[in-house]
Length: 199
Image (cartoon, rainbow, N blue to C red; front, side):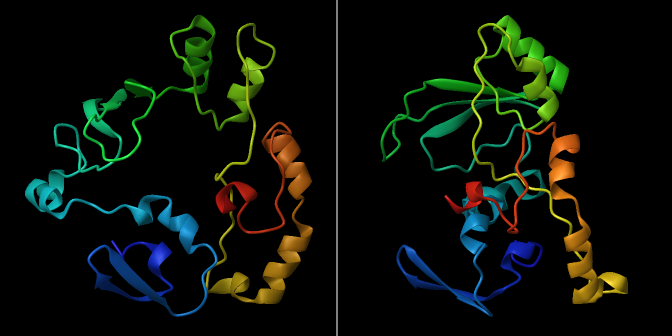
């Protein structure tokens, strides 16, 4: 929703300019907009399904509105989502027939991986990574992430002054936060968005 998403704050207009084409006009250059389109802001919903479901759209029991190589097979609210390969997909078929995603706390995730109850995980928590370090049969891979911690200034109070924001930025111990807050498993950035978001 353009009115509710800050990703579209810098967009002046969106026009349909072809059968499969839209043109976005910006109020000013926006280097982060493509990253936003890779997330929720870039989802193109099936209008018919959204209108039919109304307020229930996106809840368990409603059909999915996806157009990709997988389709929703099962959704157990608060527990798991299972997707299965969609054989009529127009593009290259995925290698995996069926995938189940489960939500788990750090300790449950570590237990599931070490006992073989889970085949893999995307673990953002340094606690999980530290607990799995050195465990037999577990291989961890590290790489750029799109996750970030950003302090956003407000347009009022002391932080509306750019000089105050710059002083706070210079005083912020980024290396200390990375070491103590994240167990040394992250790297501080000098840019608003890390390399994982730039591709």
